Structures are given as C-alpha cells and as structure tokens.
Image (cartoon, rainbow, N blue to C red):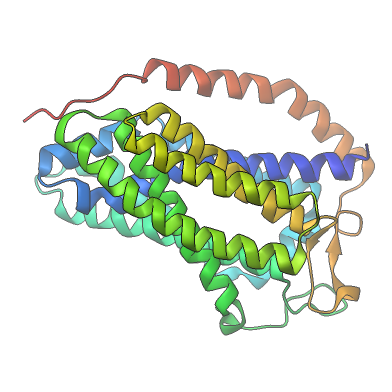
Length: 324
C-alpha cells in the first residue's frame, strides 16, 4: 500500500476518534441548560467530562498536524478557503475550554455555563458544514486556491450536514450522560436521548442519503446502513435501560458517518467543482521521505497515546451522583 493511502486512512482514523470522543463532550455542553436544573446538576454534567475533554481534543490537534505534514497542499487550501468557519470553530473551542476551567473558580457559573453551551453547539454544527463542503466540492482554480466566498459554504447541503452532526453529537452526549450519572439526571438524559435520537435518525439519514447519491460507491452503502442501524440501536438500548450498549451503538454510528464522508472523498482530499482542479492524495502529498519518517514516528508513539487515554477512561469509569 502506498504511503499516501496509508496517511489518508490514518487521518480518517484521527478524525473518527475525534468525533467519537469529542462528540459526546459537545453533546453534554449542548444539553447542559436542558438537563441541569440547578447548579449541582450542571456541576455534575461538567464533572462527567472533566477528566477527559482536554485529552479528547488532542485528536483534533494530531489530525491537523498530520494533515499539515502529510498533505500540505490540502492543509493550505483548506485553511485559506475555510478561514472564517475554522476561525469560528477555534474561537468556540477556546471559549469552551476557558469556561470549563474557570466555572469552578467563579462565584457565579451562569456566564461560564452559557459559554460552555455556545462553545459546544458552534463546533458541533460547523464541523458538519465544513465536511459537507469538502465532500461536495468547492470552487478551486488551477493553482488549487479557493475562489468562492462565505455564502458558497452555506449551501443547503452543507447546512443539512451541520444539522445532522449537531443532532448526532447531541444524541451522543445524551447517551453518555445516561451512562455516567444516576437518579433524575440519568432519567432526563434518557428522555433527551429518545428525542435527539429521532432527530439524528431523520437528519443524519437525509444527509447520508444525499451524500451517497452524490459521491458514494457501493462499498459506502455499508457504512450508511451501519450509521442508521447504530442510531436506531442507541434508541432501542436507551428504551431498555442499557446505557452502555446505547453509547456503543451511537459511537458506531459516528464512526460510520465519518467513514461515509472519507469514503466519498477518496481518492480526492479536496474535490473541486471542476474535477481537473481537484486535490488528490497524490498531488497534495509530501515527499515519500517525509511520509516514511512520519510513519515510523506514528508507529512508535500512537500505541503509547492510545494506552494512556484508555487508562484515563478506565480510572474515571464510575457513575457520578448529584451532591447538593
């Protein structure tokens, strides 16, 4: 297998890990004002992700760094053409991180909780908009420079993608909250999972169907089916009180959605409306030497990072109880 293909797959894996892990962080933030009826309950929701949220964001940093090193042309075109949306994502992540760190140090948490909510809702929506545009294709010239404007990125398909990821991540946060809490907070989370699950099934199904009809292959129909089955499975498991299975099923749905998006891209990394100007895994890649060095570094350090993060989740695996 060519190293360009290896690194395309590795970047897809990194984004998949980011969406699976950071997805429930976003969902908890979006649900915070609806599930937490008082300060004690909102504090419990924050504590549910407190030990892991910053580690989950490492997946985004590594995905961005790997894209920069393995496919510099892709990185340059993406960050110049999507400058404003990605800036808004970065700003939201900063606000969200500050809110999580400082809410426990303030006498009043209302302002920080609002910042946490908006800092979670924004990326949950904008990541869907960004990836939908990447899969759909954007106006690029012969030098692979983006020639469109902001309104070109806010097309109906991209907005549907944003709504789909927002619903899917909100469901992910609901099933995670049900898995991590007890009592009334858990019951409210399970109720929220039923409603957000229906929304994710409708919006996600519509988005994946359109994506598949535009760019898909016979192989990615499998991932579309897995995504639908995962969301439906999460709903059924929630109704039966099987929180662990619900979380696992929805995580599988998030994986399947990401596989569908990257499967629709291959062999492009940044499709253009004019196919002659598209960036592919070949014309956007670094030199074979660079990719070879990166592969050795990834082979050595990736297992260490995965083992550490798995240990973190094991240590903080217990359910939380609201204390007043």
